[in-house]
Image 1 (spheres, rainbow, N blue to C red):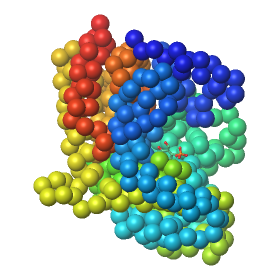
Image 2 (image 1 turned 60 degrees about the vertical axis):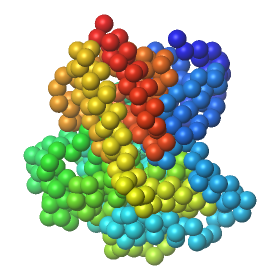
Image 3 (image 1 turned 90 degrees about the vertical axis):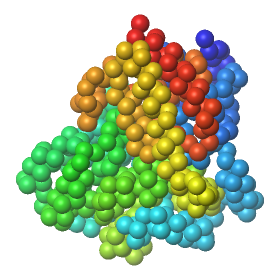
Image 4 (image 1 turned 180 degrees about the horizontal axis):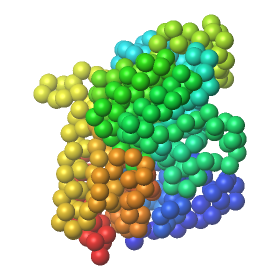
Length: 436
Ligand code: PLP
């Protein structure tokens, strides 16, 4: 059994200082049977807690750490940047460099605005879409999480799903009424909604690969229907690639599925572990943004030089030309992830445990569910008790997974073959426990 003595004491104190002892709800481990390990440091594929436990980390700070923790190139770049001052509140070359890099990887983005969190990116993108179209209503899909902006905290997944608060108190009825919701992957329901309300709808926002009700993949024809219907009604199609951008494929889910959105939201990897996010898209839409357009959006620390530097260093690593005989960075991760999942699938089968395994690039998720999972309702039917046993058994063996079945797991470039073997060995034991 893990010794979490120091973490438990630290958590007890933190609870007197912060709501639930944390600065983001899912970190509290509220739905699993132990206190959260308090992290001391991290390097490569591993994180280390204050009790001295070492874990192979598949949370990766909820997605950003695609090149592993404390990658030497990223650390060096941040150190060098810090010596030049940590914030100026004035334009820098770094902002243009990161903008160019992102636009090179995602050509649907013709202009971009850097912000500090995914929440800010989606919230701002919606404001711009509303300003551009002169319409109020938006459509989101049940179980998709787009951060905690008021109009998007309606039938959200992630922490909201785990905590059973799809409609948070504090979001006014007035705000929620302009957010129309449809089940993910339900093409007919979406078409019907657009037939009735299409011309009142400013934007349709979607996680093109959904990572916040567990990992749920778009069915064939789902994303293309969104594209066709939004085009028909003059509605802005926003891909929220905060999680899946640069992961499902280097050029994002939009490249993997061949759909060009009007706007894209990015976060997580774009900041390489520092607080950066962005929204961007068609020039005509982005030219509505202040100071050239009337839609106001701003930020004291937006485009912060340390954060731009960490993002650039990370994107440079993952987009570098592969060495001879190797696939590109994100494809290598996809292959590694597949190996891990083959091992986990075998462990489950050998133990007689029915699971659904989903993968999209280096994102993956496991549902303790006998049936297909393709939307929030089917995801919600997964066995929570089995998940709890699996989670604790893996943690006890030094494998750090997200403490909720409604979250996605991530592979990094730092995970070694040895890490994968160790994880599969642990999975064999954990699946046997689940079966008991
Ligand atoms: N959009 C998606 C798809 C996300 O997964 C998240 C966070 O997990 C967000 C938006 C919000 O990002 P942040 O937590 O940086 O506000």
